[in-house]
Structures are given as structure tokens and as C-alpha cells.
Image (cartoon, rainbow, N blue to C red):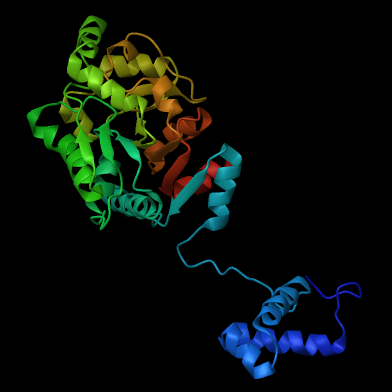
Length: 325
């Protein structure tokens, strides 16, 4: 702040404040050495430095590094009530592969910087974006989490099964955590089969893990499935997708379908899902959604509107569009 008649110290002190501030901030002289050079106590040097800040002789300026969008992240956090937004620098003309790679790298960096070592993490099973994140994570030198649990049935067609297994297995290995698999499909033929599978002792054990999660890492899906999901045997049929669209569906998280306002689409499809319940999902303190691109924009907005995620990792173009709504 500028010096005023009410904050300006005596002229002699201005000189001393300026000298001490320049020695410390510009020349990098340690406080103890400043004290010795000026024949004052180190405690007085510390007080002078604080005084230099309070009267405006020293001002702090944060220079934002290229590729960091702090102001845009803050806009998203305020607009959508997010605990944190992470905006990844992606070229506007990037293709799908480049977008996935950039989102994966950004999400990997975010996790590496924020995991506590005691987290119990749930992860969605069929997300290409989550797999891109896992592929770009470096092994932790100390344990990054205690366990990693599938949030959605991870059993599928043999040609796609490796995708689901890689997400959980490699993430657990990277973090030094115990993997917990859901040995069932994500979608079954009718509610009776779903109910029967949920009563199996192995699924009861998985449900116990779902109750104790501290964090979830999830892709945000559009109604049209990705190539991996389409070949896994866990995608909804074309007729079901048309019916969901008629009900206003825009996206899903762990196969739980939601509308543009974030409300859950209940009914025949939801009754056939083997996944963490919506109630349990919403109780997880930190819920990280990772998605980007024009195809996912409506789904991302619905996830934010419905408080499905507390943290969003997305690309620059999507972030700008979300902030402008």
C-alpha cells in the first residue's frame, strides 16, 4: 500500500527500513548477517522487515507462470462452489489423443502434489482419461494411499478387460496401495441379478470399503460411450441411450446418469448398475472429476451443477466455456 501521513515512519527509519529490505530481498543477505553488519539485533531486523511490508516499502507480487491459469481456476471455484479447479493448458486445435494426454498429465501432477499417504481412494473403472492419468504417474517413493478401490463393476469383455485392470492395478502399484477389485460387471441384465450379486459376500466386502473412502477419482462421461466402454460390454444399449436422452440425461459418473441440473435419472437403467451408491459417493470428502473437450462440456456442467465433484481437472477451452455460463 502507498505511504500516507499516517503510516510513514520518520525519515531516519525510512532509510533503515529501505536498507534492511534491500539487503534481505534484493541481495539475499541472511537476517543474522544483516544484524551483524548494522550492529542491531536479529529480532530488530525481523521487526524492520515486517514494518517495511506494512508501510509499503516491500510489496509482494505473484507472477503467474506460463501455462498456469490461476485467475480462471478461481472463477470456476467461486462460480460452482468447487474446493479446487485445475485448468490444464491444451491447444485449442488439439485432437482427442492430445487432449487425453494433457488431461492425464495434469491430473497426475495434481495427485502427486496432494495425496496424503493415508487416503483410501475410489476410482472409476472404464475411463480413458483416468487411464491416461495412471500412465503418466511416477511411482511414489513413500506410500501415497492405503488402498485403491473400484467404484464400478470392472468385469467386461476380454478385449477390454485389461483397461479396467490396468487402471486399478497400476494406480495401486504406483501409490504403494492395496487394490480392491469389483468382481462383477458394471451393468447387468435386470434388477434381480443386480440385487443377487450385491448380496454376495465378496460384494458385501467391497461395499464396506466404499463406506470408508476419503477420495474418489472419476471420469465424467457423456451419454454416448467411449470406444473402450462400448467394447467392454458395460455400455447402455442404443435404445436405452435414446430413452435417457428423452429424460434429459447429459452425462454420467460411475454409470449414475444425471441431467443438466445434476439431478439423478432414476429408473430401469439405474436399477441395473453395480456401483457405489449415489449417497455413499456424495459422502466422500474429496471427489475429483477429470474430463474435457467439447463432447463432454454438457456432462461436465451437469456434474458441477449437481455437486457430483468437489475438484475439477479440465482443459483451458472447457474451463473458459464453463466460466462464461
